[in-house]
Length: 609
Image (tube, rainbow, N blue to C red; front, side, top):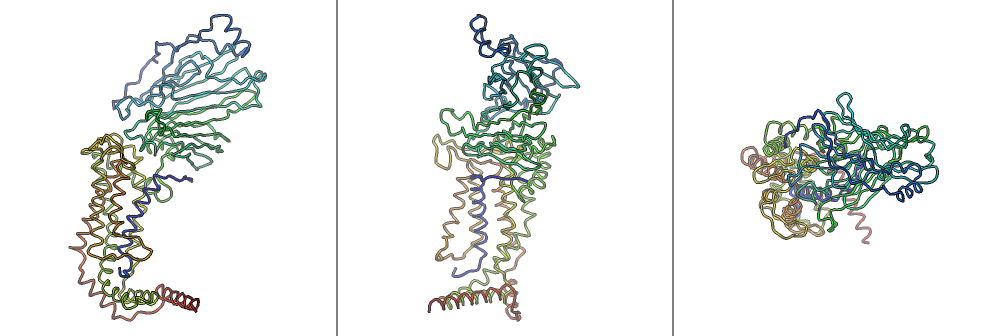
């Protein structure tokens, strides 16, 4: 079960799609007067020669101060001269500092950022890692202040790095990192040993992990819309922190916590669900002092379990790509962290569009795969297009008679509606016939709207003038920023907006659209919708704009084919005239509607008296 919070960006997109469908409904309503390649696995673990900067504690005054402040634990704060340690496999390069046992660098070997620099999720101090615990004499200690002695080993093809802060051979705090020959998972264990007599187990030991997510995409605003903290809890539920501001929660029974950076993720997976923890998120992309380096700041605090007076826990880190199939392969429900949509929208993406696009892109260039998938989707929906267009033709044929009824009963709205419904009933025309097909398209429209922005396969894949289908396709850098539009001009959104404009022109044809009281001016909306789409999609993934452009072109083509080669207006008109001659039984929805309107008119007259 997914519990999705309000997402303003997807809401705006949903409104745009709804406006398009509203327009489709309106034209059918009753008228009323109107990589670098992977490096080979190393047989020996490399060690960086540059030493971590030591804290000089050689003079006796410093030693006395440490001992008086930290007692026996002052031994953990003495520099042992160890250097930064490296563990790596086919996919990851990880550096661990002996100071605090901190992750100093996490590099994804086969990927680069938007500047073609190595893709690094952890670097230059953007990640803070710390374990806090309390001693029986009331001191609160932090592992970030400890020096750890490293030891490298291997077992069953795994590289294992053990880091110990030891008081004595059998009294120590240990961090253990281990990694397989490939994959994006890193095993991580925290364990105290032999120090239970010194620990206050009534106070929780806390694991704290904070990360400032680096910008990895061309548009920091667009990347920020899909960079968020996600967590899985209970059996199959997920939830999210705020996309746009600061947020924090204390969820229970947490199975994993994901720091998703759009197309890359850092995920912490405990061995057993955590009874309760604290997660935080802060938006950094609006902070001018950070010069658009970071998107969000994420944090998690996890209580560590005590057993026999000692604390410890086992975790797994996932440092890798936010790709649905890759995350699913680990069988930990991590793929749920990708926002593919809720309900039927997510179902369509998981079981239809993801497999379909994955298959097509396996042997076709990615831009061609998008076009072919669009063709398949439009052909699959062609019966809906056909029914919608037939409904438009029927309403167009009946339009002159509807206008006559409007003039005849212009002072009696109830009578006008009754006569209109009677005409529809006798002619065999259903004004809802054009609405239902349009509504049936809504799940497909919205599912694809959520699919393209999170499709990892599109990242850094070029097509025509677009050098990255997962980002905008700029053909002109303006050098200045236009509010709600951006500092560049993308071509695919322009083409999609033009196609939508011509589609709406075709659907309205030569029909007149007088303004009705209380109703929006539909001619204004006809011009406003393409303009809104142009502004909204200027910073969106060019793959999504390419889909909408091709989809609208195909819809126009299908309507032309239906109009000129499939539907005969004269035959439809003759069929309607024939239907009018046949007696119609009273009853059904039309009869109930007419009765309801008559009752409403009687009540209105009674109130008037």
